Length: 253
Image (cartoon, rainbow, N blue to C red; front, side, top):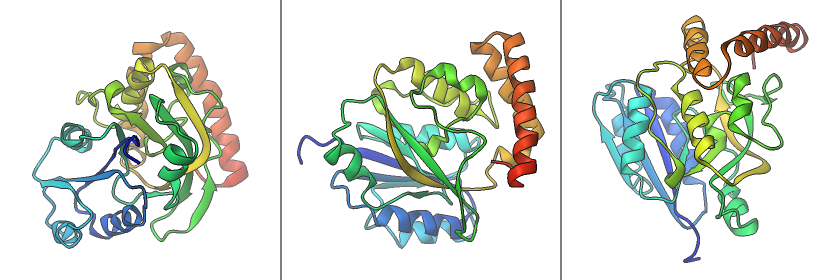
């Protein structure tokens, strides 16, 4: 067990008491032996801090203070993390299974990977499952170039070696996670697809509530890495897929 990597799970929260409780309970069920759990609270006044204090037996580090937004909070988590791997599971989200880290690092010995990724199960605020994402699917072999299609993988479904991680760019308010994933993948040599569900993602996230602003910001990010004309043409294609998806499944993701 001594050669197993430590995994730092980071939860960011702001005034989301019930969601935080659900996420903490999910982390509590993990049975991986080398785990560090960090919570970054943005100065909540809804009782979230009391939830944190009631679960200090599994929380290794936490802070509660004002910040510049969700990505600033994530950067604080990176600074506090001492694990070889980082895994962002924010308030409202859950790990897929209590044995998932054992499957990854003990059974499959993926500890030499720079990035470990998998699939995402969609759930609503009441925990009802909507199955896997259908419009955007994790590719068989993930590369930074796949991100031309946007968030083809949720950041909750990525476990990243801290050595290849970067800070979130605070110039982006809504979609800095896309930019972060691209830069992480560009830094990575060994990227492993687990072909497993890694997380449950709660619908209605931050960028989803700011759809138009998110689309504009996403375009600005993508043209940093890809030909602008190709980005436009690709998003026209994705727009048609999106409409067909809505007609067929009557849901966004």
